[in-house]
Every structure is written in C-alpha cells, then in structure tokens.
Length: 423
Image (cartoon, rainbow, N blue to C red; front, top):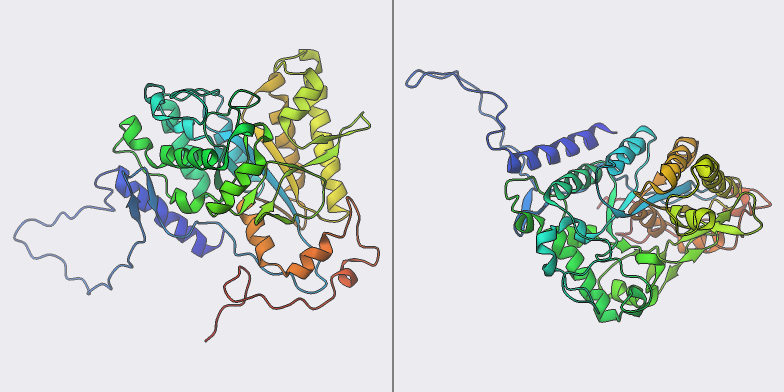
C-alpha cells in the first residue's frame, strides 16, 4: 500500500473511531490550573476532515475510498492484464466467520473482492414487518432476517472490507425465486422499490437495532452501490432497466462465455461464465451453487466420501478456465460464491485454493466489479472492440504487440485513466 493510501485509510479509521468512542485522546495535559503552560509554536490549522454523518449515522461520507487504484488506459501494443473477480452473494458474517476469513485470504494474496450484501441481513427479526417485499406480505423473506449480534458482526466486516478497497454491492432482500412472486415476475417499478428498501435497511441499521453509539459504515451507500446480482439469476431484464434508471454501472446476473465484456442496455455485462467441468463433456457456470447441484443435486450435504473430489473438481474447473484466458484472450474471469458450508465446506476450500494460485501470478489483478468497470471505462472503445473479436481461449496469432499496435484515441477529459489537466 502506498504511503498516501495508508494515511488516507488511517484518517478514515480515526474519524469512524471518533464517532463511536468518546474521548479518543492522543495524550493528556498534566499542567496544573493557573500555572503557565509550555510555550509551543503556533501550529498550522488542521486540514478539514471530509467526514460527514448521513441520516441517523448508520453511514457516513469519509472521502475517497482507500486502496482503490486509479485505472490506466493501456498503451499501444500492451498485453491486457488478466482480471479475476471473486464475488459473494448475500454477504454477511455469521457463526461460520467466512466473511472475516475471506477478507484475510484476500489481503494475503493481494486481492480485492465484491460483497453483495442482502439488505435484510441488517434488519433485526423483530423489525421484519418494515420489509414490504413486492408481491409478498410484509415481513416475508426466504432467507430470514438477522439478530443484533449478527448485524453488529456483519457491519464490522462491511466496514473493514470497504476500507481495504473491496466493493459493497447488493443482493437485494428477500431472495424470492421461482413462480408465485419470484423476482423473475417483478416489474421495473417493483425492482426499484426493492432496491430502495435494500438501501434503506443499510442506511438505517442503527435506528432499527438501537445501536446508536456504534461506528457508522464509512461510505455513502447511494454512491457506493453501482451493481448487483439478482437472486437465482432471475429477473435480469426488468432489473437492468431499473438499474439503468437508478445510475448503476454493471450487472452480473447472466451467463457468458469467457470473452471480453460489452455494454448491454447501458450497463457493463459482467456476468459469470462457463468453464470446463472436469470429467464431463459440458461446461459449468463459475459458481459454487451450480457445481454443487451438478454433484449432489439440491442436497447441500451429500456423500461425505465425495467431498474432497467435489471440491477438487470445482477448483480444477476454475483453474482450467483461468489458464484458458491467461494464455488466450485475457478475458476477465468472473466467479460467484456464497458464504456457505455446502458439502462440508468443500467449495470454500476450492475457492481459497484458486485465490492462492492465481492472484499472485504476474499480470494478474484480482479485483472487484467496481475496479473492473473503472478499468473498462478507461480504455479506448476501439481497443475493447478489438479484444471482443477474440474467441474463448484465443490468443492473437500475431502476438499482442502487433494485435494492439494501433494508436488508440486519447481518453476524453474526465474519463478514468485520462491525463490530468495541467491547465
């Protein structure tokens, strides 16, 4: 981490501490009353802190996010970096402590990730009626709600994750799938209502839990929230229309091949992808749930004798997909997961081993969706269009230097990666 980034992160932590702990003094003055104090040179005024509480103090504006690198436009002939995105649906901290564990795994391997928070994970069970899900009665949720300790633990992880440069997205609220009011049947306006409620639960968790003295989340969620993944990958069409109207920048609710992303209806389509499925002739979606269904069906705890083999199968499939891109077209690899111990936790082990094997390789960047979207926005559209001509696993026959040798158009002023204005 650069020194300036460390200073920025420290300032945010100090500001958050000041809200939650009264009297965070750096020292004490022991001068007796009436006695002349030590003569000190007049100090320069302290820089104005950007810290500002929002609403009831559940969230706060603390300035630019620490540890978020500025994207750069590729130079002519430069080989693209290999991006890998690890993302988590319904992120929350419970007794398994998987959120805190994977934060540590990410830090140890120079990675940042995207955590899709379910809004009801910040709503206590006794306030469940505050949730009014589309096409369902008040207080209904297919994934339940939380207790106050679970909310406190989740908020702590969200706070630390954001300060480390990770992204906090949304997995909405009640996780309704299938027929009878599932998200696939929701209108554009119902999606907007669901998103509004997800934001509200994040922005009012202090009021809803009574934890008035707790430290806030260090971000403005209205600005932080730029993308999502829909429950069960359903309802994408109407969600995307709602998301575009609300200023979102990407969606990851579909299924793609391992090719370079394009914009779809104004949003970057950063959907998960199909990768080889060891031992099978067909390919598999890059998500733990889908590997599980194709191994043990809908039974989340299948034959224990097969746990190791199933985890190895997922790990090896993801690594095959990684190598296919790394040695081929360099398309970003998008991976989705859940904080679950399905089949004895074998998928958590598989994901951890993939992180450890790929994120420290040369030219690999394990990033959040926000960072990937920022980088894509910084590139010359003609360069991205050329990258999209490469098929799955296809490296340029003439080499990268020749393939991308054309001089790209200069970045428009204000676009990420554009030169600073020297005027």
